[in-house]
Length: 460
Image (cartoon, rainbow, N blue to C red; front, side, top):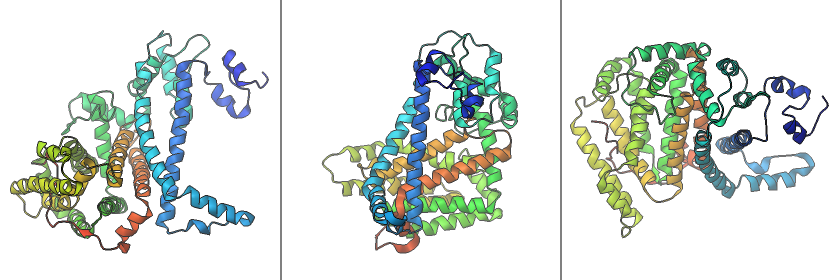
């Protein structure tokens, strides 16, 4: 068959006869004239655009971190044009718009993912064998995988509803491709996996058993990751940088926060403290010592949920239009400190992990509370972006399409890769100015008040 135009390809339900596409087109026929497939093609383009925007943000962040001046870029005879062009592209206004665009794009992505689920189901004429054949293409890249899920033979068409079912069958029928997950799923069915909070819907899992099975795998991978001192230091350093930068954005000094944060990390590095730490956390429902259960679930997710439902006293202050922002910020901080005072009264170990944890929260929680609950500002925007990145990371590691559940080693490797990616985005969003402040190049700032509180109602 000769090379044809896109309309010919669509009319004849066949692919272009090109060498580069023959291998893919030989596997699937893509009827581009159907609404569902046009939607999927659009989603592919949207996700590619999203990746490019993220690259633009991280590219600028790396340049700022290295203190590389854009006007030093040389391109031969076109130096003047290149210098002027680079100055325009990476201007502060451009970066502000890019950050705003990314936030809106993430929201749109969430909405887009539910579109197919609302479509009307059509004929379920494809056999289970055909589905298994689709699922067997695990090693194809993401683009090919999305195409294979859109497969349609000349005799039948897989509807939008069936595409959703194929994603579910990926977990149910193709377990052979995920032996690590398969073993964990059996444990979940036998009731051998427990958790403090089920986050099935939040993480887009197929059901509670699916969540528990993936949770077991993530726990094992988290433990493997933290066996490496280099990884532990990366997590600690990145966490300190991000939280310190948030404090700087609030125009306060991060000095005291960094001191107590480093004290907490030093405390955790001593293995003789782990037994008592395990007992302390067990009284709060945390029975597994790993990165997910302690940092992601117990600290971050619980805090996000508490900030979504702050005490009535804080809501009344925030919603009072007669009070100025400065008074509201002070009132929010005071409320946090009041909560913390009550929490400290219940501490049974005065110098244990919880005590160190509270010391950190005394410095950061008033800033985070004001960032999330306060007026629209750069601080508020970054707090929302920070929360989004944590949620996206969690959804990614609980997605069989995003990470490899073939073994604990492959899952740990993919988790670390995603941690680096999300961290780069966060640091790039913060920009070079905030990072310079964190690295000790800041001008005098307002010191945080010496005592504070964690707006974290679940810690008893």
